[in-house]
Each structure stands twice: as C-alpha cells, then as structure tokens.
Image 1 (cartoon, helix red, strand yellow):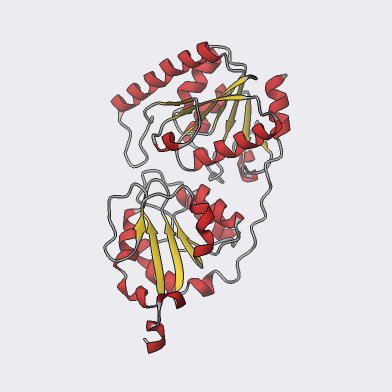
Image 2: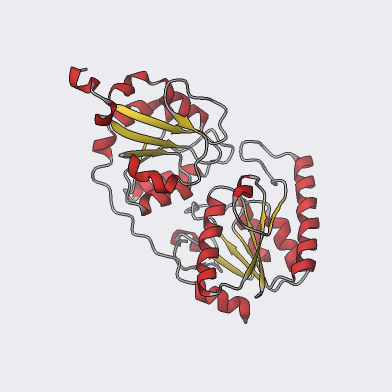
Length: 161
Length: 164
C-alpha cells in the first residue's frame, strides 16, 4: 500500500470532480490509498472501500441553521481527527462544499502538510463559501476557470478537470 | 397541428430533461404540464430529489449510467449544474440550460451567463418561458460554438508536490 490521501467532497459536481482527479492520479500511481470523506449518502452505492459520511454543513435548499451547523461541524472535526490518526495521510484534497472547512482546519492543526483545494468549476466571477474559508488553510489552491485568478491571488489555473 | 405530427413516436424529437441530484420541481412541473409539446416531442424527465412526481411524461429519479444513454436523445434541457453541462458539452450535445433559481444558492446564474456569453448552450432564464424555448430548441442550438476545454494538466505536479 502506498501513501494515504484524504479526499473530501459533496454530492453531484463535487463528487464528479473528485472522481476525475482521483482517476487521473491512480493512472499515474495505482498504489495511493484514497480515504473518502463525503456529506452525502448518494455515493454509498459506489464501490469505493474507505468512505466516511458526515452530515452536511448546510443543506442546499435551506437557509443557515446554527444548531445543525454546530452538530455537523463537530462531527466532521471528530471524524477527521480519527482519520488522520488512523491513516496518517500525506495530503488532503478538498472540492467543497462546507464540509471541507472543518476537515481542512483539523488537517492543518494535525500537521497534514499538503492541503490542496479545488475551487468549483462552476465558479467564474464569485468565490464559493468553502473556497473562501479553505483558502487560508490550503497550501495549494486551484481554480478551474481562468477568470477566478483575479479573485484568488495565490491560486493556480491548470485547466478544468 | 397536421396529421403527420401524430405519427408514431419514433418520429418525434427526443428530449431529456436533467435536474441533477437536487431536482428542480418548478421546471419538471412546468414541462410535465405542457401537454401541447407531446405531439412533437417525446420528453423524458429526470427528477432527482424533487418532490413533484410527473403525471403525463415518462420520468426517473436517478440514473448513474446516464452518460451511456446520451445517444437516445436529440436534445437536452438541464439545470445549470456544472457537472451536467460540462459532461454534455464534452459529448458535443445540443443543450438548453434553465438555471435553477428555486435553490437557496444563486450561483447557477453564473454558469448560465458563462455558457450564454461563450455561445456554448442555449439559455432560458425563466421557467415560465421554457415551453417557447423548447419549441425553438432546434433553431436556438444550431449555431453554437464547440466546447474547447483546457484539460487539467497538473496531475503530475500534484503528485510530485504531495511526495516532496
């Protein structure tokens, strides 16, 4: 078994982007052990072995609920602490949504040295909540639309997944 | 309406409506209840987690292998979800985008504006105008630009970076 990498993503497009990157990485290095952290049950049908689910930080169709937020946040923190201890990941890669925020914070505190965030490919002229919040905790930050480089000064653009 | 348009369904224009994981009730309901479309179009609805259940048109909630069935349709109507739009454009499909403004987050407009300005898809901004947009879908998706994607080219760099 090679190194472990935490892969953090939500449903729909977040999941698609994570899978595209993972496949590209696996084709170059089949030994990487990917640990999936996601906030949706939809993916349970996938054949991925190590998949951990936390409640979503914010439901798409609902406004902000502080209690649900704190609950989701704490659960994500506890899970991340457990996963970092268990797998000693070399890196964490996040795609959004909000679930990435506590995961990245904990990864930074627990000295997971490489913290890579991909801003969503649907962003052209505005930052996502998770992109905004994760950028201070990231060591490498990719945008997938060139127009966003104006908003994220330290971001890299290397095409779209 | 002419008699010829009442022919067997295999002569009808086949359209798939895609609303992603979240669903898009107002769009699905609007299209489902547009009965006049049925003489010319065979429309299938993908409803996701939406709560409206179509009454008049064939539908399904999820299909993980949608990508393999794109050849069964002539046109696609989709919410402005990037995953769906980019996937359809990569397969060179003709697409009408209706941004989902039912959602709490409003960023679907951003992508709709982008594909409109780049002339990659036809765009219908308001659900109430979708029937007219479907009637003109052929003309409106005829002269679109091909999708020139800059493929992500930093996988090696990312791996090197992680290992260093």
